Image (cartoon, rainbow, N blue to C red; front, side, top):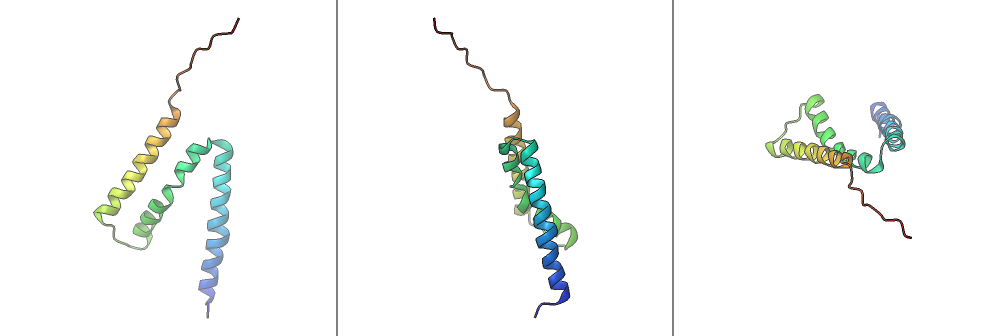
Length: 95
């Protein structure tokens, strides 16, 4: 049988967690390019790992730390590549 703590935890995850996440996601899409926002979805697992380490005293292996750093580096590279100006192709006007 669910306890009051379980129900409050589920309400927190459903209303605050999901609601705030969707609000921020769609706000980001309205202000940024979709390719930039789509890369940010890769932060979710790393954020969960770091929050578990900070608040739940979970231990991190070297492989997990390397994985989080690889994801952050990949996001940085992806965002950086979106900012580089594209070469323009000169077009001639037809006579």
